[in-house]
Length: 126
Image (cartoon, rainbow, N blue to C red; front, side, top):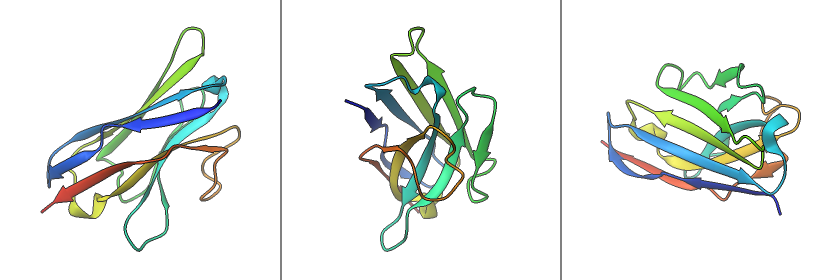
């Protein structure tokens, strides 16, 4: 069964850093675009960052550009993919539940993905 499992969330202070991880398993995700979305209380889920299946293309929301970095590691047998989101200089407005996502075509088409994780909470205090 396909699974995306996020980890690494927590409570930090403004200016701190966090690394989120997403472990993707259950199918061959090596040719899937992978990415992160987030949803703050009372707001709609929004795109944060994505990386193409080749690892070459990386795209970011304007609000996180220059502070967040996305990367991926494909296991040799493609059985497990890990996607990372390095978040630096965190701000209170980054507070949200962060969701890992995977799509066989693109994650830039809107708030849609073939697969979603259950999310991990990131809280940034001022």
